[in-house]
Length: 324
Ligand SMILES: *[C@@H]1O[C@H](CO)[C@@H](O)[C@H](O)[C@H]1NC(C)=O
Image 1 (cartoon, protein in one colour):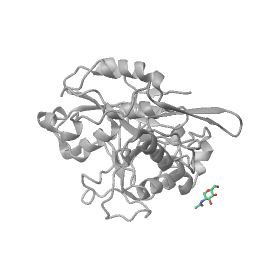
Image 2 (cartoon, rainbow, N blue to C red):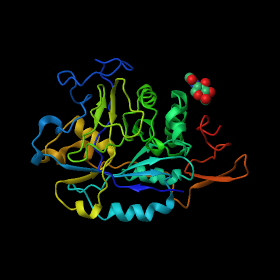
Image 3 (cartoon, rainbow, N blue to C red):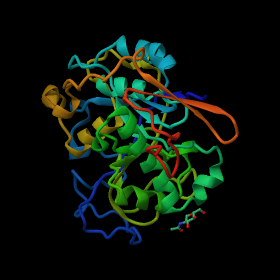
Image 4 (tube, rainbow, N blue to C red):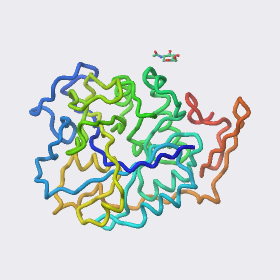
């Protein structure tokens, strides 16, 4: 199974409802009078809140895609546990999880350690055209279906699974963002840019037209108020950036919270979304987790690990995320 480990400096984000644009209307050029934080942001390179550059934290978002597996724990642990953020909290990361070969015990443990879990679809179907042409129902069944699976088998509150990334970085443009808006996902972190790398685009919302280049067609042209977009960007090496006192390595959700409420370095230790409040421990250890075994129609086997007391009767899949 692929485990693309990407260390991304993420440039921009997607947000949630406020309502001076109707969802699905053709998006206008961004109106700086109307579009204000915390729920709307034009796509540009201006520092949120107009803060001076020396008063803002340097934000680095780390993300991992695809199956979340126990055997990564050592690697992920080595990268992330060797360092701390300036406030003493562990470094953050977002796991964009797809279903097959994911251990939901591991997911539960990661959530308990403070990492963010987001949806990367159930099937991770490897055909670009499939995602490009999928309709809203299909997007829903894949992305929200994965949110349901994570909630069901890793016991994570649905409200805490607020982000998505499309497989192969292929969205269906407006169809994808319509699905996102209709299901209250807060952000998407899919679309790449080549034009805005230095300085990068900050996360923005889809209330208005994007100023970003469209690298993978189609890109949204309609207005999706409050949908935050986090543009995936350049790769950095952890060791070059950690241990500087203004560098913060955080998850995507935390970065969007800072953009919604730009906070100066001088007050940053009191910025609640970046504190490390203890999460409940995972319900079981790796050794205690159940291995649920399934034989698929073609004879292949799948195992699914969970701390749930019972295995669902069927392998959870698109259209039947609870495996009923
Ligand atoms: C979406 O596509 C699926 C598969 O082709 C189809 O069965 C379904 O009717 C479509 N739904 C809508 C709302 O178009």
